[in-house]
Image: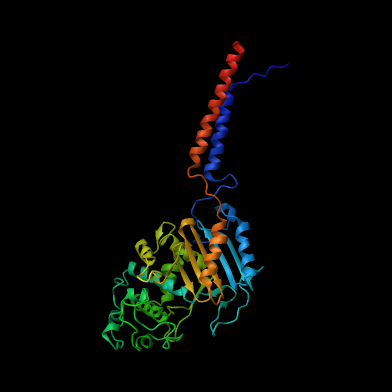
Length: 403
């Protein structure tokens, strides 16, 4: 029988080198199944990846559509972003996934176009959250002194029928506590002028009572317009949309009879534009190393007001906060899982409960067990142990031969 001579030193070195390279692949996430935890910033274009690359089950996510179809939910699109990667996006029509990567036809809602050019979807009151972001930027840039500055200081020549109206400040308008009539009151109309909003009597003194009011947010748009010398839409394009890569084709903003961008509604977005705004908010106003909006402002936006369910033009929820537009135009932030989820829809009632159920049972549920907290240590201990084992075998074989 031929005797095989083993060079134990070379063998040990070879095994050691192999383990080093194997660990390098594991550490860098190249090995199949490893979660990519690197943050991606889709300023120019999205990096579209499979959900499994971000530690999520595609099968579980697609069970969501069985639920949507079974319950006949009129959801128009779902976009899911994790770690900045677009891991999932679908358009639906009649609760069924569309083959085309665009919206289907949708009838108007009380004369308001829901979808434009099959790509832009009305945001309704999710527009308000964009206004809050723009107010923060305007303060950062020095156009607005602070959140305590009064509306009347920007428009001293308008008619104020009471001293209370002259005391309405930016923060009152951000928190829906201005005392101005609400969306369910008789004074409400879709096309409101600035003076027309100020004419009716206040329902309460500024700062006292929450009253959901699109008219209040229109006044914030007027402040942005007056203080910056730009239309709110133009200011948004320069200071918010362009920096995060939302192109001109991805948004449209309606104006009132005074050629002012509506503040309480009127904005149209693509789903991916919605997702970019959500990603910016999820990262507290930071985008690829640049603070587009001050972190303090973003943190303040999510602080519940005394009513407990509202911040600065955002709704507080179990995850963080979300935007909310009529019929289900919502952007959710899930900081615990680095997720941003954007929905467009035409759901007439119970929309928040439906979205929370979907997020909990199909999106968060799709997240697998997290990777070991420090895979380097696990790999390193094995890398050291195996060469020691080989040396031990070599030592024992020599002892056996001597006997």
